[in-house]
Structure formats: C-alpha cells, structure tokens
Image (tube, rainbow, N blue to C red; front, side, top):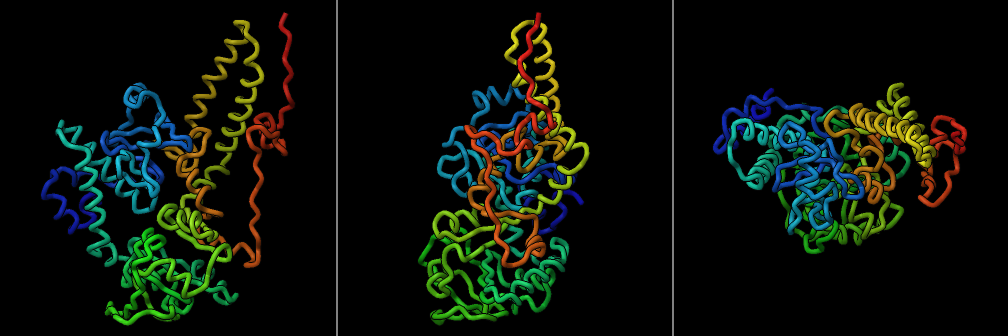
Length: 432
C-alpha cells in the first residue's frame, strides 16, 4: 500500500493541505531504526551516539544521505550541544531543536516525515520544516485519538501464545501483576483478547487505562476513576484498587498508597524508555525491564559468520594499529595508513549489515548510541519479549556484569582487541 492510502480517514485529513502526489510513496519497513534524532528546524534525521556526536553517514534529508562535509559545516563539527538535544522525555520543546524517536509507533512517523521532505525537495517546493514536523505529529496522533488503528487490531498485533504462558506462570507463582497503559479500555481489551486470550483480566490484579504516562508518575492531582466495560464512568471516590475492575487515570502516588507496592520489590516492564521507565527508576526506585523487539534481529545478525568475522578482524586490526603506530619511519607509517583505511571501510560494513542507512540500534561504529545510553540508565534488564522470562526460573536472580573501566585492565582475554583474535602481544620491532 502507499504511505498515505493505509488509512482513508488520515488521507482525507492530510490531503487538505498536502499534494496528492504523496500517495505515490510506498512505506519502507527497513528504512529507519528507533532512537534516531530529528532536527526539526533543518529537517534532518540522524543517529547520535552516547556522547552527543553525530555518526557521519547516517544523516538524511528526505530519503537521501547528506554529504559528510555539509553536515560538518552545518553543525561546526559533529558534536550536538546539550542545549540543542531533546529534553528529558526525548521531545523537542523549550528551545530544544532535536526530537528523539523512541517507540515502535515512531517508525511510520519517521517514514512519513522523510517521504514528505523528499517530495518537497524533488519538486522544489519551498516549505517550513517546523510546520511539516507538527503536521505529521498531529496526523499520527489522530490515528490514536480517533481510534483508527483500534478498529483493526489484528492487522497490527501478533497473537502471543508465549505471552499468555509467561503471564499465567507468573500468576500461578503467586506474583501480583498490574497493567498501566495510556490506551483506552476498548483497545486494551481487544488487543489483550487477541494476544493473551479472553481470560486476560483474570491474570491481572489491577488494570489502569488512559493513565497519561509519564504524567501518571509525577502528577499527584489526578484521582483514579472507575470505568465499566462499556466506558461508563463512575463518580465515587476510590478507596481500594480491586481485581476485576477497570480504573482510569490516577497517579502513582495514590497507587503506592493503595497497594503498598514500593521500591525494588517491584519489577515494571515497558517498551518506551522515557515514558515507561525513566521516572520509576530515578524517583521511585522500582526495578525496570525494557522490551526491545529489535533484539531478535540484532542478535541473529551478530551471530552470523560474516558479522563475527568482521568484528573479530576489526578488533584485531585496531590492536595492530595501536601497537604499531609508534614506528615513525615512512615504510611503517605507509602500512599503518593502509590499515587505518581498511579499518574505516570495515566500520562502514559493520554498520551496513544491521541497517544500510542507520546501522545498529545499539551502536554507532564503536560507541553506544544515545538510545543505548538511555536504555542502560533507565532499565535494569532488557529483552526482546516478555516471553524470554520463560527461559528462567521465577526465583532467578540477574546479577550485573562487571565491565572494565577505561583505567582498568580487562579480566578476560576476549575483552582486549588483541584477545579478539587470540593474538599474542606484539612487541615493538627494531627496523635496520
């Protein structure tokens, strides 16, 4: 289907102001990855690492890459100052010119932005990037507000036999389970009936809909309100959160008071690092788990012979350059320069095997991505699916791994660049 014809309601709304020719664009499923930043004023989509540096080769205007020299000229280098980055929740607001796209719903939004930008550039249409960004954001929001997606749940959600299995196992093990979602009950009920089964409500002790996260975790003013299966709202004060009943809005402080579920005894799973996990980790001390579906694909690629060979040789080559660069004679420097060029080519290859435009969700060439940094900050554990818990006993303890700091010696040979190839240390050579 074309990008705009996926939804007639959205198309009718969008075509009021935007060219009919946009219908010709096809949705490109693998064009973007999550975690990218969008420069709202320049209409540029890019990947930024954990230290605020743009990964050259991953800056796109529309559907085409921007030359590295042009990127460096625009940003006076590759570093994006803190004041220009997205705010705490990844949004473009209060002077921040960057928006970070973090959730699954952002993939079609980025596609739409890139396609419209591409159309305008191809047809030499003068436009204001800020207006385009806001219009696309509003159009995507309409899909949720008007319930367009909710009417065809089975087209967008996969049946989760293993999800039912893990929830049932947790329930039978005596764990208290609760659901806090921003979606309305009608969508939640249809989705959970399809994913888990008609008995899904029996598995949860508390169900809260239209919670308005992340406001739910910070705003003390909104009380809970009971809502029936038909959407009828009750007006009575809530003194207890009861199993089998549905509650709307509310706030975490009232939730903690009514349940007594506090601190590190709670493990909360979410798929949005900011809206779901950040406040719970920083302010309330809950343990958090992130659901990252892309892990399946990334791990599969990492285990291919091509990727293992590339990464191993890249580490080994880096070790050779580090050891041999001390030799300043022309012949040695020529060899080292060849290795550096080979290393640069291999770095591009390691990007392309994950995604031709933007590479891995988790890494730039060698640094963690900005996405990875936030993930490691706000999530105690992360996995591709909740069903991954079926691989563990429910009394299993996950211990944090010790990784060497920059000033510490690696504890295992595999953590050194030379160890990646099982190479012995290469001592300096005397050249006569």
